[in-house]
Image (cartoon, rainbow, N blue to C red; front, side, top):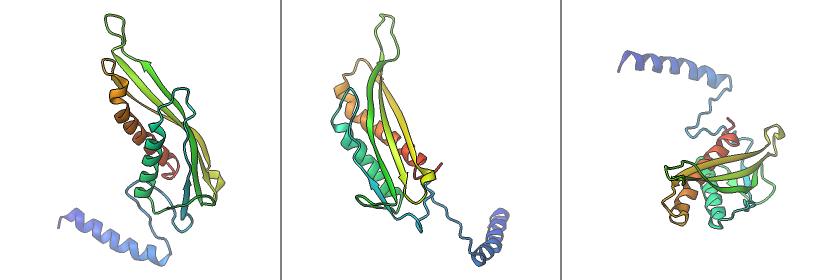
Length: 174
């Protein structure tokens, strides 16, 4: 055992009994969530309907599945309908394409797909934690490709990024 490892082991051995006697129990998670499971046990994740001018119908299901799966994998909260300790609701408010890079022939060489989601996070135990915020993420793709060829993959990638942002701002309590 290295001297550093012995030092860390001795320090932990000295601190943990004191912390246990004082009722202080350190709480660490590897996913970044800071949920006190003594207080929060349930979450209600509502549908996120598409309210954007441009609509890609599979996006709603892709986003909702990603959000539900991420919360299930990274917390011990039980998902219920109504009357939960925490609530996540909102809508997909933006789905847009915009040209990015222009080639020598004055045509776009890259296109950006941007998705925006408005989220309302309600903490029924501590209303000071409530959030009503919009989150956006995008991916660029070559304009030589048809949107229909890359749309599913881009929506999946963007949904994953949006869910990560939303989790960190709400359940991660960053």
